[in-house]
Length: 209
Image 1 (cartoon, helix red, strand yellow):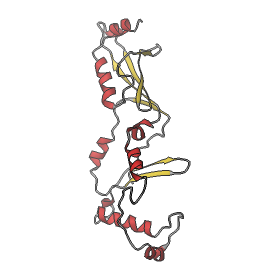
Image 2: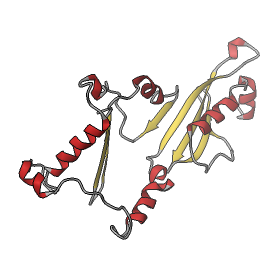
Image 3: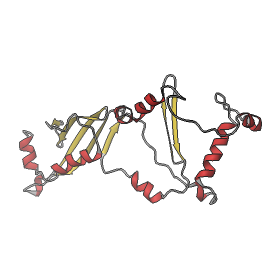
Image 4: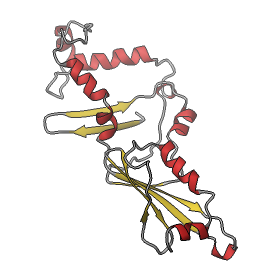
């Protein structure tokens, strides 16, 4: 298992995990690499852990076998109890059955699908967070060269505020048409890149310092 997550509600609990069968671990690691930014959030922190493919333990394992094995575990386990019903329950289940995931078979399933596929569900419920990155400012004199931080506050996946922070100064909000837009890494990097060519003197003048 490469990772697990859960969402606990009043009537329901959602759990998900990832089983690695024969994944390219180098590509997986690269896709999970974090950029050199500081993130402040009340969300549960992600804890990096060692991972392993199932084929590293048993080279004969394949995805179809894994699906069957997991399916049989469900067939032999009662829906409301964490007990092993064994072969007796397995026989009562009459094996795997194909279903038709439509409103005719399951009234309301289309609405559920649309809700869980919506932007509001996938992104809008993201816990509020802030992202900031340190930028080295240019200067006409090396003695005055200093760092500046650009900070973006995100609420419900939308950019709420963009601030610039110089050492020993309070954050100064920036007026930008980016405020109110959906946050993305590309958006944040665009803001940071636009400030990389700025000088210490110009930023101090623009910020009234």
